[in-house]
Amino acid sequence: MKKSDVVQAIFRQPIPQDPKHEKGLAFAPTNIALVKYWGKRDVELNLPVTSSLSIALLDKGAMTTITLQDQAYDTVVLNNQAIPAHSEFAKRISQFLDLFRPEKKWHVHIDIKMNIPAAAGLASSACGFASLMSALNDLFNWQLTLRQLSILARLGSGSAARSFWTGFVEWHAGVQPDGMDSVAEPLAIEWPMLRVGLLTMSEKQKPISSREAMQRTVDSSILYSAWPKKVMQDLAILKQALHTKNFSLLGGTAESNALTMHATMLASWPAVCYFLPETIAAMHQIWALRQQGMELYFTQDAGPNLKLLFLETDTHHVKANFPTVEIVKVFE
Ligand code: DP6
Image (cartoon, rainbow, N blue to C red; front, side, top):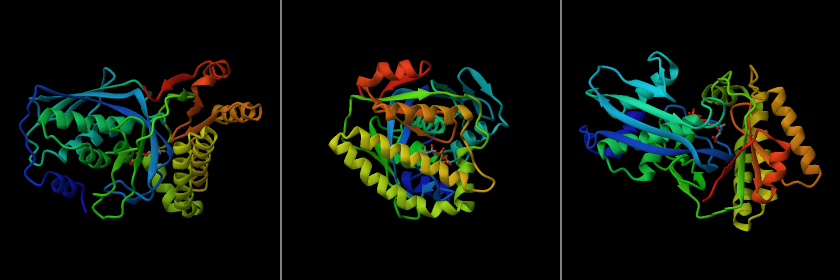
């Protein structure tokens, strides 16, 4: 099954190609997985081996504006900087657009403003593809549902499936080969006291993309076979933690899930290691603070930076111990 088959199945008719507005505009929040997506059962469609569960960062994400242009190519500007057409980033975007313009009759100028460091493990592809998909929907007035947008954005990047809602979001792995049941949905649970702290150790481009690292883990890590079981357990525990508002259980489950994901990467060959010395030092600092009774946990994605998890009541302690941390509210 190809990506274009999925697009056809969703539109069920020729894709409307006439813009309804002068520009398409959309914001998508980035999301941080508490139980991670790591490994695909279908690489072409970005269908995951397991379900995953994330929390959206309220006002951190991508704002994308799309305008049609009278050129035979697309142009992309990220945070006021033109992206070279031959770069991986620009190519990925153009290939994604090709899915929606079978005859390549239109080209666009895309302006993306992200208020998170791109490519440093802060889910920039998630909010990037989600906002791009919503902006296209806006430009052409396709009137797709959030569920359909989630399925389509997933074709650009898996984690983008979760970036259409705020709060806690679960992306169901699904079982169908066409992925029509591999879709995200929000959970009706709020936790206004919850805080996420972005602890940035490096804004440099990561040494290996999450896409490549994920595939290498699936192909070569002997530990990968244990991963689906770990995710099933963690999803059940995390949902229990959410329903009972048990923060220690939430933090511990998220931290253990992230560390297990990184363990599967370390066991692949060549080994994938996103830890910097500063990452490890921060982990030890967090564990030492927990020993002293502070309810502070972390999660880590495909990059060296940590995301701290804590409750509002510990905000000043967190700031005192990590002066550079950027604290984000996750609920209004
Ligand atoms: C570690 O969604 O970037 O952030 O589907 O290949 O685009 P592709 O991968 P991507 O992977 C995200 C991996 C992660 C975990 C997560 O967000 O669940």
